[in-house]
Image 1: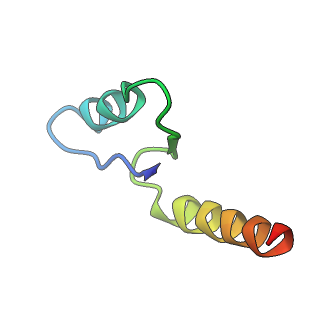
Image 2 (image 1 turned 45 degrees about the horizontal axis):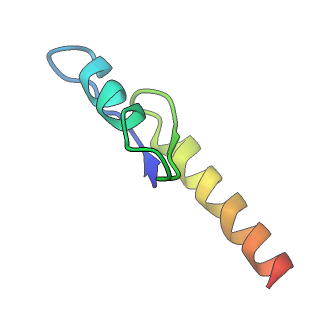
Length: 54
């Protein structure tokens, strides 16, 4: 999962904390608050690694 916390009443901290509290064994990557561009770049990197290994 790639989490993108979005700012709101609590400036995105509530969204950020909910993402980092996933249960053990669940792979989670969280980018900065309101930083969808970095999430897209991370997804491309993951796909690139998958294609090189597969």
